[in-house]
Figure 1 (cartoon, each protein chain N blue to C red):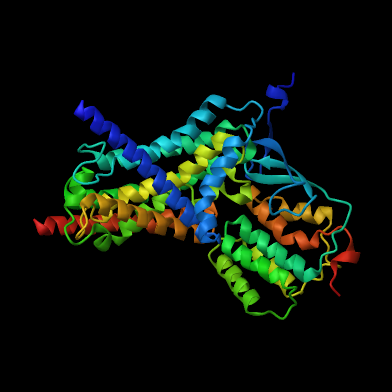
Figure 2: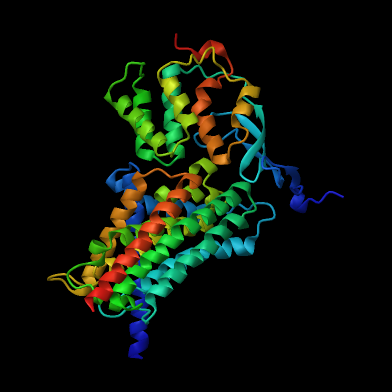
Length: 306
Length: 184
């Protein structure tokens, strides 16, 4: 009985935290694109009210099943990512393979974003979907190798162990390349900022173009939720997890997650969307080798430290 | 028998620029789109996301916008299209101050931003080139109008995204009448 109650409050807490992270990301992104503070905070609820009342518009011969299924699956991915984050000593979803699960979830986003573009049976949706696949190939490998670095240093794939292994020197401080590659990957799977080309305005919002009403709401909200969730997972990976003076550990995790979400969303909002064919080359030829080099450095430090 | 699921004919094959056979899609752009010259209609044939063929249809009535205002409007639209909202808003502020070729600080900063975006390949050089020449009034919009054939040949061979950017940048040269476009 007590266990069931604990699990229920934990699940409710994760849902609430995802919601707060998504709202923070949306508000910070709106501030960065030139809205005033109050307007930016109210942007998300206003969009929610508008899109909930909007009539659903369908395209001819849309693949409704896959289209809707993919669109509505993005938010659960964000919730599951948040559930992996250890608050004090344990996460809602504990396990020795947290890092692998985080990676698995972000790869699911590939299928969902592509299917959102495909399902509408529209030219711009399909163009957006293909752009995403090209971009995903380019950001995902640096992201995967970035995940290797903290796991290697901590000698564990358990997010709680990785967080606990950092002591006073956070991994973000001595693995900056991995940290940056990870954050870039977060922008990639949330299709925001410089990596927003699959939903770019110059292709009529690409994968988002034909979405309407509640379907549009869940996908748009999911982009910000994924950014927030990605930032939250970075806390145990790179930002020392629950470590911090005076305050309880869980508060530190929440604080770091919210601050990183706000900062990342703000930077993303300030930057223009980059064209995919210009972005893919530097991601493959510059970032990927740099991240592999970062892993090598971490490996040498680990072996030398034994 | 022609296959037409849902009333839309299936895409037909055609040789694309690489000599491969590609599905050809018919895709209309305009007359109403965000950051798009109002009334302009393009009937495009796409090979994948590359625009292979364009038919132009444009509105009959000219809008009588002064050249400098039209140029800054084009800058704002291009910046909006790449999601650079803060700088798009700054370009619109410059536009609303009825600018001339001699620039105040605000206009200069927006132009520096355009140059930076071109350097980092966020914008194609063809787009920033024409914007620069429009802002310097090195192109006289009243005489250098783009006719339908010129616009079509300008756009063909570019991908959908670049086509939107090129149309936004060339909007001041698309005015239907020479009489209203010039600022003198």
